[in-house]
Image 1: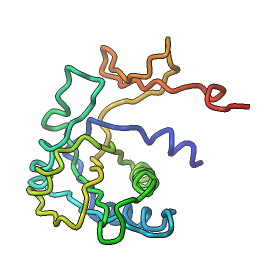
Image 2: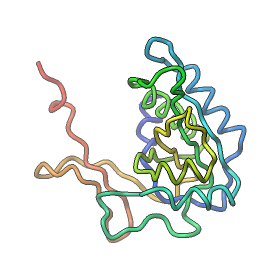
Image 3: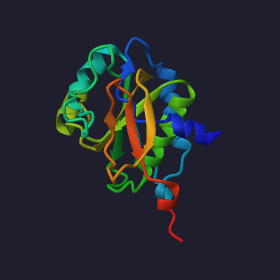
Length: 188
């Protein structure tokens, strides 16, 4: 059932770095994005795919990991992503991809989850540093980066307590994500 995949599709930030993400899966994820809806059917998104350990090590320092976890610098060696996808907007087609980036990211992550992997959409990117590092032409705007791998953490959904929407980790390292209740979202 699709809802089961959605429930498994959390923002994972710790991975089993020893488990490679096959390039064929990364390509399949882009194919899922390609087949998804696109505003005006413009299809302006492009992707750079990385699963080589050396490339992943170069990309890692350009990313910030969890804004609400102030004392956590990000995944330690051995817990880092085994692959990355850099999502780009083709400025020669348009400078407005509307919601295409989110639709595509969700389709790609659901594809990864179905295959036993997971990821995190990272918008906090040192874009110019990454552009230089990967030699990305100015034609493309860096939208976000998907960090991918075999999840090595438990992520659970909680109800919101006292209006606090900030995710947090308990003493066992379980990552808790507060979500608003269904009745709060539906206005009648």
